[in-house]
Image (cartoon, rainbow, N blue to C red; front, side, top):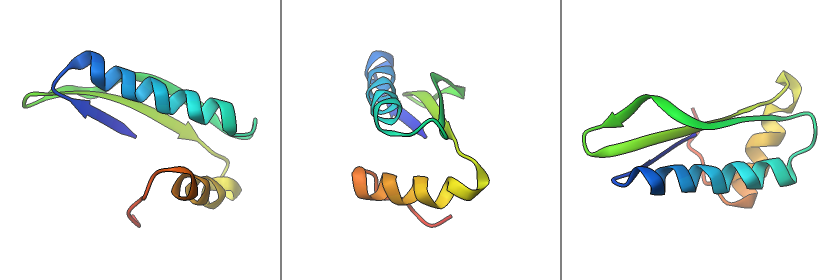
Length: 77
C-alpha cells in the first residue's frame, strides 16, 4: 500500500497508523513490512511511503476481505 502527501511527515504518519492497525489486528500468519520510503519516494509534489503485508497463499483472500470490511475499499486487480 502506498501513502502519498505533499508533506513528507503526513505521508509517513498515515502509513504508520495503518501499519499499526495491521499489526494489532492481523494474526501471526501475516507479516507487516514498513512503513518505508516507496521506491520512487517523490513523484511530482507528492512524497510516498509504503507498507507491505505478506500473507501465505491460502490467506490472501482472507486478508483482502478483512481489509475491505475494516476500512479499505479495494479495486479488483
